Image 1 (cartoon, rainbow, N blue to C red):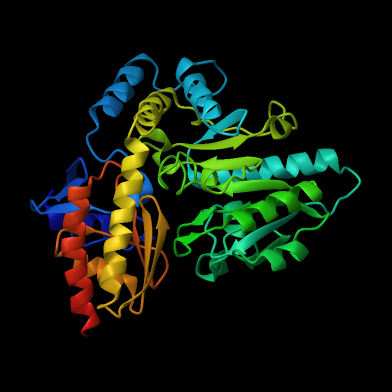
Image 2 (tube, helix red, strand yellow):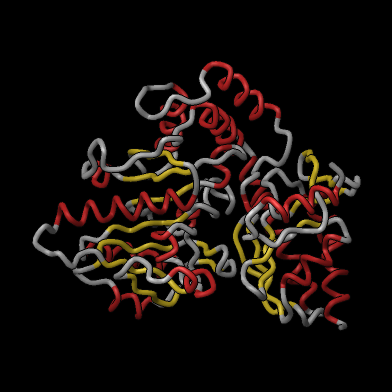
Length: 401
């Protein structure tokens, strides 16, 4: 099929829940993508922060293929080695003591919400009102009904009302407001330490510590959503390490499977001890082939110098854009951690994305007016320089219109 045949067939056969580009991607290598017309792009979105190791990582692909030849799927009714090894690695490098594997970020959030409810019912059986959840404005936690219920943006919520009851939204980083929001009826507080879709908003140690303390005081579970900001994206393995505050539960996904679909709920022993066989399940969770790919991906992220490079490249990108802001009034603010950067603009961010295609850039948005850069974590400084050399002229051209 040629490009136009693919695009026409997509319109005929695929549910129209996405606004796709007018080109067709064909293959990738490292941080680069190529379309069917032979055009080359430097990727600054990584499949929405999924492809941490870029494209064509031989070790990941080989691990997946080798395990698929042995066992490609058996369900969670049986023991397999890969999922135990991956769980052990996550436990050894985080606060968590137990792992539940699933298929996506939104499923990881669902698991965390259910597990929090289970704990609440066990510790407060005489309080039927202990089901409330505190979430935050600017949050994005997924598209399933539970995850959507704790996602604040009305654009995503309105078509599917009514959602899960008992969710209270508070302004992100508003320490005083959250003090009155968390009560004895709260079963969970859910927060992104670094908001992604909501505009790349970075939390603070004071704010997250307040959530931790309030959760403890009210026997509520603290959930960190690190689906986008976890596993090296911020320059540390987990974003919570920047703030010195550990949660009770943490949702992971995106890069966890090395580019293949996988999610995980990471929990303390206290949470795990409230759960029993049959309380929750996932047919495809802990797929042995994907776990094998995930082991290799995590090994590479943990390799010496890897996270230091993430920090260096992310800092370089933000510094260069901040410098340009002095002469480009279209730039209002630049923020982020590691290789997750948000550029707040005076114009629609999608305009920058569309113009970027013509200069060989794959970019993203985080809301209407925030440009998002979340490149593969293997991006080097010389490649980041090419990004800046092409991005700034795009911004300059649009700022003159």
